[in-house]
Length: 115
Image 1 (tube, rainbow, N blue to C red):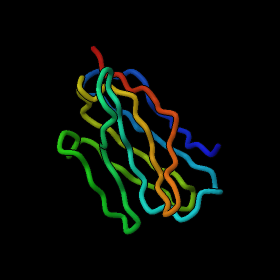
Image 2: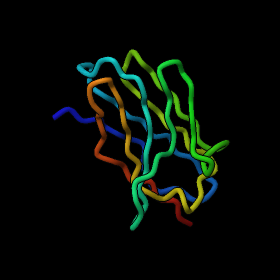
Image 3: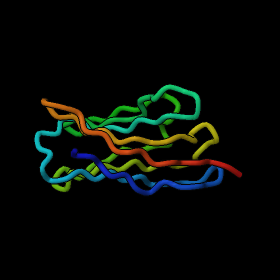
Image 4: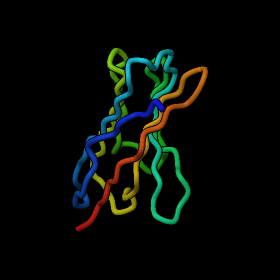
């Protein structure tokens, strides 16, 4: 079972920053999209941001201007820089890497914004 590994989560105060990282094994080839999703307690998993093959990025409105997604294609790694964090950003964050043949997911990492 090939799985991605997330890191960088934790507890932060409102207005603080965290940088999430996601690493996939070298056996994953043909990645077309790297993305982040999140799931807050008692809510459905929601899309947060993505970076496509050409480097094009996209974000949900609630994180625009605060979150930045980036990648290192050679290392099968994605990052999510999260600044000015808010209470409502509290969730388990999941990394996705998409290929033409299947999606790969991480196990999820907790981000808690609390004073």
